[in-house]
Length: 411
Image 1 (cartoon, rainbow, N blue to C red):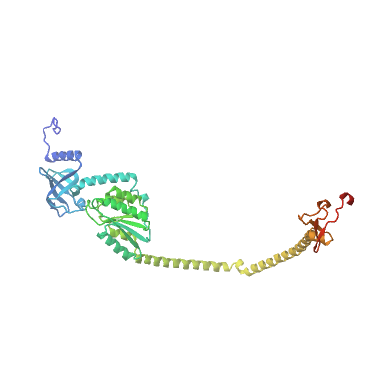
Image 2: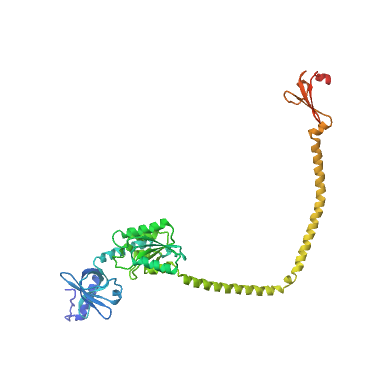
């Protein structure tokens, strides 16, 4: 039995029933596909929808692109153009024709790029490069802005013009790079790293003007995403294509729709700042005036209280207390000083009694052997005819020993 035979029933399907069966089978078993072909029979309907066929040398496929999808196109389709379309196979029941409902349309070769881009986005998102929590706030008043873009494109002219208009004192430093073609991604990544090594700018603008997906591809390269992610300087991605979001847009601290928009984001308009300062100044003045009025009212309330009426009385009591303490200090000093003076005189007398010169004053003398300077304590220390120095209270004598008396005889 065939799949669509009705067992025990010879009633045939209606055209609508069979068409719907075919439609459900196609949609369930094919789903979304990429198809490459040449555009033909292009019709732009007043509704905004677009109808065309994709053909090759052996077949053709009817296509419809509804207005919502068509509004996202980055180019204008033309008959004869070779394109790649992403869509879902469905059946238009009224005509019974199967067709491709197109969601994305790119020039030939871009479809594979789009698939690679989606894969890269998934991988980088899994690694946390798109995590909103790591994105930094831009400095409110940057002293210098670094720009990574082409030196000849409209992007740098727009950035310079807007920054000069909004804040003429802000420095602008360009690190020129290619923004499309082979090697462009590496140049962009290196320029970001060089600015980080330079360390003299507060924020970076990285981008270019608009273009096709192929033109913007350098900003979808992993090397650029890594450089933006590793930058210690906040980065504003300014790839001038509002409809398409590049990988650098997702990694950057802030995304601007155009380079002009980026310049407006990183530098505040001085006239706007001036207005804000004036507003804050007025608010501050009102707040100070209100606070002073409040303090004045509080002071007036307190002035009527007992403590404030008797302020001078309190001061006089403190002055009297100071006089009392001064008298106590004077009395204590009068008692202590005589005691200290008497003790000092006693110590001085003892020191004078120990002074060798005081001993000599009483008639004693110090005798030394002239040859050695040794002090004589015993007669046996010298011999007859040896010279001796005798030190008196005043002056000295040089003597010659005539005789040495025996100690026993002296005793």
